[in-house]
Image 1 (cartoon, rainbow, N blue to C red):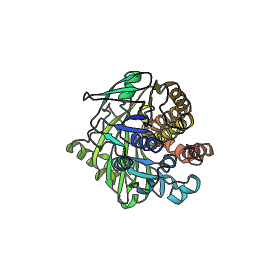
Image 2: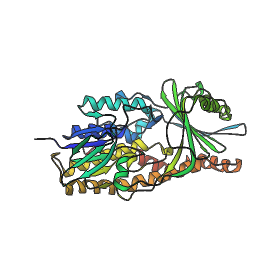
Image 3: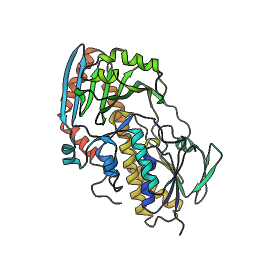
Amino acid sequence: MTKTKVIVVGAGVAGPVLAIFLKTKGYDPILYERLPGPGEGGLSLMLQPNGLRVLSLIPGLLEQIPGHSPDRMIHCSSMDGKEDILVDNDISPDTMREPFGFPLIGVRRADFQRLLIDTAEKHGIEIKWGHQAIEFEQSEDAVEVTFANGIKDTASFVVGCDGLHSNTRIALFGKEKADFTGLVQFGGLSPTPPVLQGKFVNNYGNGRHMVSYPVAEDKHSWAITTREAESKEDWKAQHVEQQNEIRRGPLSEWGFGAGDLVKTGQNIVKYGLYDRPELKSWFKGRIVLLGDAAHPTSPHLGQGANQAFEDIYHIMRLLKKYNPSAGQPSTELLSQVFIDYQDLRLPRTSELVRRARQQGEARVVEGINACRVRDEKIRIGSQDDAARLVYYELLTGPFKNSEL
């Protein structure tokens, strides 16, 4: 019997993981990616227990993740020459495993993507690089995808995992206006200074915030959020002169190791943060969106990739429920899968997108008095039982016992 072919658009982080799950459940996925090969785009990401819980369903994958787990989470404030530790929590692997079953793991995005690509290829999944999907034509039982290079391919259904600038999303719902949030980020990778060894740090200043965490034994990834004039939403590294300006600028004097990271930053990137309208639906016919293509978010909760993995778990669970044989599904069957998927995931991800936006606004305030109020909220908030419960519920998803 011919296996059900699925086109997965996008070979970043979500696409390869979805393709591996589809392959192991009896489908015939093929990955199409617009870039010519695995990219260096993006700096790093923090894999959290809810995301790792999904990845643990792929045998042997967790043991190969090329990252590093922090031991302590520190929130600190550096203003007017005064340095103050607001929160200092134990987040070592053993401590995190006790309630959640999994640690936190910081990874360079490029290294993690390569692992996922290698794993997909070992599962016999074909990846076609340099193919930008531009048109989707649906029929009663298939979708024909046309790529910018003129090549066409047909599959039973299509999943758009093509990220923030999703062509699949545009094809389904039109081009939306992206609104600049007023916040700009720049960041890089740096040798880990001794003071930051094993530490995941949120450093707060006047009109700025830095997050930094280990991605290797001797390397930290960092990103600074500030309020600046509008900056383009791309990840190209700054010119050498611009990077040197950042390294020598006032941020190089920042306390708690933040300045050391800035001074030694490599391949520093700068990009604006933008909001997009919330979609009311994630699918049309036989085409569905997943991850950032469905619910693009600002990075302030560090949940982007982790939520994409939750999407993957639920879409696979629902495919198993409604199409246990992995046979050729009718449009009606796919609609049932996609409706259940979006009804479950849309409210959760919309709430997280809102919380991420609020977190960014709350972190980057200007004026010493406003900053002191912010710092006190952070200090008190770490003891808030309701906030702890929300955090616990977030990291214990998306399942207790897998239904896959």
